[in-house]
Length: 392
Image (cartoon, rainbow, N blue to C red; front, side):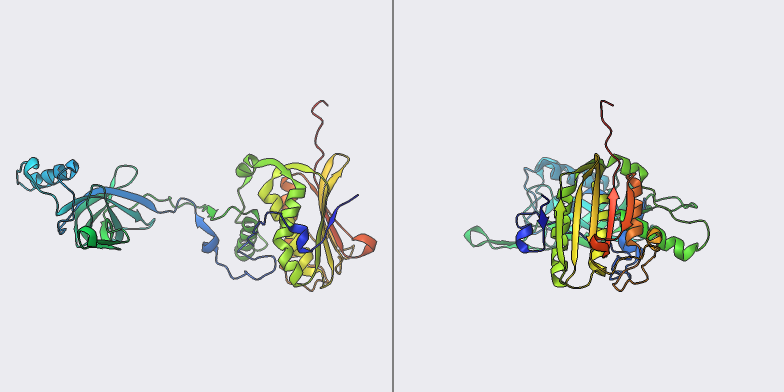
């Protein structure tokens, strides 16, 4: 007997809640249609570069390194020697000086002369960098090249005051910042201009990638050869794994339950044991798109049911609603981009089933659209290829 879960809170008690973030670009319900491309993607190879250097902070008020910090003595001795002053490192007091590591992030388009912030952190036993001055410090990249030079007063975000039992320390006085304290001397490596630009999504999302491609082609090459395409085959081939379909349905019901209750719609699941070899995050997108469509177009008081199971060794996913349905003549056209049923009244862009069709194609699955029980509503089924018998 099929186990039917409905939208009561008890139905999902104990089921882990999975927050499904709606795609930012041209979301299926149209609420995020104003998002900008730079908010969801970046040019491949355009990134910050991390810099690091060893330096000295001087001018401290007896809060620097102790004489036991040997590298501070050595660094000061070498600095003075370069300036023509010869001293015995064993005779020096370095309590007004601290050895520090200096770090910075070099922006991708920084040019020589650009100023960037730097952070200095004590590496010896200095107690406080407050009031110190960072001496000229070369900052190198991972390739060993000097890209910037830092120097300037150090501003700390904390302080240490008092002595003995009356002392008090707030935050971390051994770490400080020098705003615009480094001057860029060399431009960072970047991508070479060419006829092709590659965009990388900030978060891997097949739906967002498909919508970006669709939007770029619609605006810049309407009716012509497409100027943009999604290159994801290499990544997809590495992501195939066994996906438990009942578990996937439970997660989707949990994520969509509040929305269904608010409308209200009776959201439930009829899940039979079934597994497929697939890309799990793509199947989540597929099922979320089908569920979104059903919740959008089903009127208040309606029913939406998510199903899975196997028929003749082939697994399937199915979403059925008792909404207005789709005319039989329109069903073959519903996987086209921006196609909406003539009787559709809910909010949407007409991309949901197109994306579902794309994801089904990646998995070699067959998408079918029909009427629900008793000829009412819509039933969308995705049938996956039957698993081959290893002994066959």
